[in-house]
Length: 297
Ligand SMILES: [Zn+2]
Image (cartoon, rainbow, N blue to C red; front, side, top):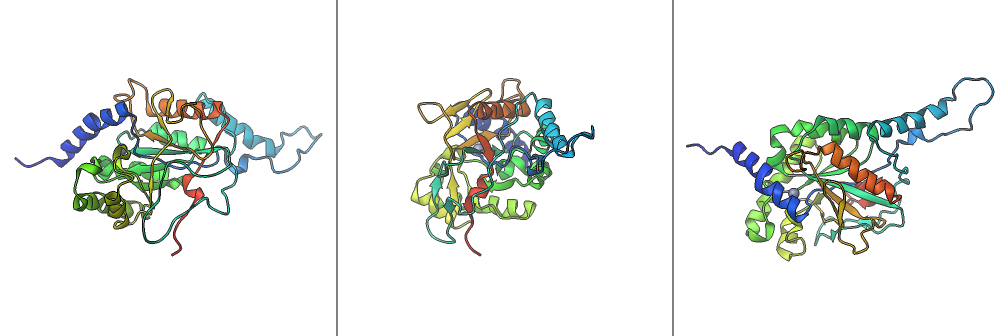
């Protein structure tokens, strides 16, 4: 019988892969985040007084607060302006850096979301309203049945990054196969989203520090390997730091997941919990790519 690639992929995505990734907390996708509130919501001028009309400048923050309230969330502090001098500077050639945090004194963290299995329209609505920046590390065979889902998220300013063709354990496959996993995802994502991924995340973070994987990445276009410091579960994060606290510049891993993988919770519920944990610790969410300088072209 003919092989049914789609069924195979779906089984893989919904089954062993998702469960393994979830159980081990090994993240694979990520994303940067930006201002929690659009700049336009910042009151720009002194309030007019005395005429009884609602000042126009006050309306925007109220609308932003209402958006957060709709999702039962407290607003995150607005992120600072992106640094002019980027803490991460990528080179055009040579060994690619591997990092799980960005050096910054800004009280910001970065959200990355991996794989792409759950394609919940409510999550698009949530990000559209809250304007929290994320970076999406997509696995080709997990998103290829609906590349379009991610386009409105991309249109919000969020970047698409590379997370292989079908999510293998990279250290268990030969260099040539590593290369096809990264290069074939790179070309598919570039074709679909109109821009070449700058960053790569290996499934489960596996092999990130091996020369073989570094060389494979170099041959396919991404110019950095991105890991993470925290991994979002259903209600809270798993922290690598023993004090279980966010630090400025931490990269957080989350996944596009739904009720099957989240014990009945939805993607928006999980993401709301993530934002609440960030808000409680007084952090803003910034966009990872705003802290990275791409190689000069
Ligand atoms: Zn993954």
